[in-house]
Amino acid sequence: MTAALHIALGAAGPRIVSPAPVPVEALLLNRRPEEAAALLPRLFGLCRAAQSLGARAALGLPVRPGDRAALADEILREHLMRFFVFWPRRLGLPPAPLPAQGRMAEAVFGPAGGCPGPGALSDWLASGLGVAPVLAGIAARFGPGEAVADLPESTAESLAGGAAQENSPWLRHRDNPLLAGIEARLGRGPLWRAAARLVDLEACLTGALAPGAELRPGGTVLVPTARGLCALSARVCEGRVSSFRRWTPTDHLLAPGGVLERSLASLPRARGALAPLVVDILDPCMPVQFEETADA
Image 1 (tube, rainbow, N blue to C red):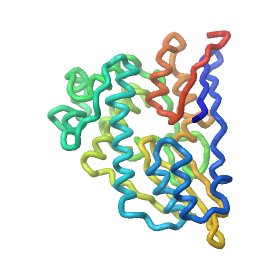
Image 2: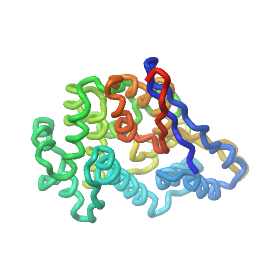
Image 3: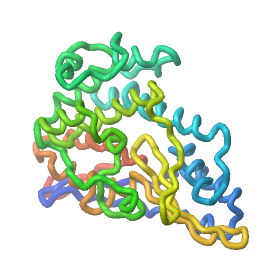
Image 4: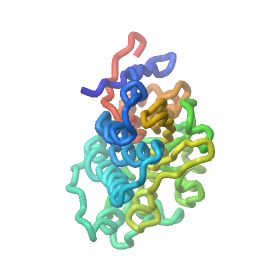
């Protein structure tokens, strides 16, 4: 069973207690590379295609023919689940079946088949088309500066470490005008983060997102996931794994002073009931338990 993330909201700010991390390196040490690469995705319930591709690249193994397609499908499905199932439930909207292949663009965006431009966002949110009601529900619940977190964006160097940083799908769409417009009006809050996943979903559907493993100088491998970028590094000595490190979007999200802590800290206390929605949008990739505090 996956351990839970514990969150308590109080006058002094959010208190976040993360579960003990899985001892990934200890579980992979002294194994042969193929065995280690097969084991890593089985240690976690989500992002298995990303874990598999990243492990193979970090361990010097060839990428298999279906690895990239599996990762693309995984990212697409993760996004669709948020817009059609998880977020509607949290917003009190009816969940819907995931759209069939060939009808996804219209099911997500409506007849236009793509994201609205910055000047058309308000009309699209009010249209009721596709997943617009989900984004409209998020937009209606948060004002400017509420549940926002403004952190330095991840770099290839910072990803290989656990410091707080902006590691999210926005990294793949830094220059997107829709996201820039939302940030200018509301900040990097729930609507901005949900819209970044919408833009990333569009990239999945158009083929603009072609996921693969990027080997950086120094040996760190970067792999896209639905939540951002995963960094992995490994060494193999005499045919056995001698070191293995892994940093995920969840690690950066939960870091002290990270996006989760800052987002909850900037949520007005009177609107604490929205904290579960904030956390669902941030998507820590594990069960979450909210706890009462004496000063709540």
